[in-house]
Image (cartoon, rainbow, N blue to C red; front, side, top):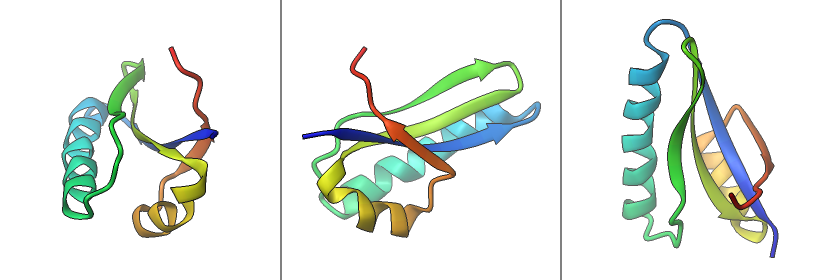
Length: 79
């Protein structure tokens, strides 16, 4: 089954702190809703652009996308 990476972008001098804070809320959502999601992280694009993301099965994406409203998504490539 294909995995999708739901992404939230944060830009500016506080982007890192905002992405880390957003990650806390993503983890809370996963716990409260008892979801089987194990991949959620932050990543630096550059000093002024950070992302927070979680990875979901394509079949389960729509309700999570609709509830959390990510800025964008892409197919997840395992590292």
